[in-house]
Image (tube, rainbow, N blue to C red):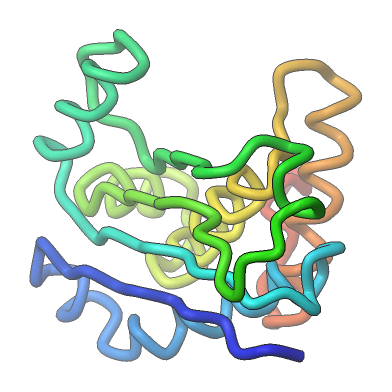
Length: 163
């Protein structure tokens, strides 16, 4: 397996306080996403931005025309057919941006640890970079099943199972 380049930008230090091992966890989760994909043998780059609600809200407003924060945004840098046809030594799959306050709030509301919820949103965002989506019930089922399988390899409970 080629090495994956995972760039992490911490823009809100609360991430490091809440999850002291966040850089190792981030690299582990993204590696597991890539290993489970058809691109596991490719040299790829993924950028992760650990931000706050204000930063994510601005991006959400600009790119999705939704003037509110959200838990995770993904910005793929490839088209679905591009990855297999590119012969570049390193393919930039894209960016994942995660909002601290929203993740903290959701983890509390859902009675999950912030670490588990963060990992779930990171895996979710990583799958979006690989062009998985959840616009239809069928797409959602495929994506959620894959998320649950990846999270299971990290001993994280399926977030879609009812309590």
